[in-house]
Image (tube, rainbow, N blue to C red):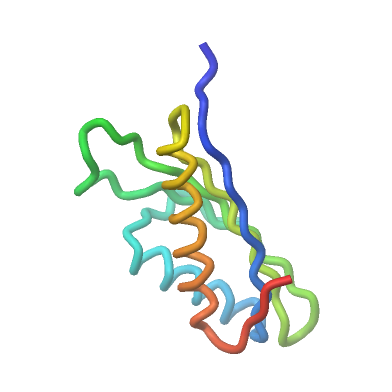
Length: 113
């Protein structure tokens, strides 16, 4: 049986260099209760900390891709997956990706394409 999930993504443009964008992502993940599971050049993987979740809720997972456009401009793509079927996981995924994007934007001047 295939695992079903609601997937959402959001792109944020930051007027900061890659190092500052990575720091903004780390701060956002930590503040919103995510656990980093992997790091590569320009990529961060994480899952939602299950402590505090309902026993009926499976933690969401995400991948953040960071692409420098110039010395002081970085595109951040948040791709999030919330396990489940139906509108509840879809709404949860949408709220989570929007909260992360908003928190990441707090790093400095930002715009959304």
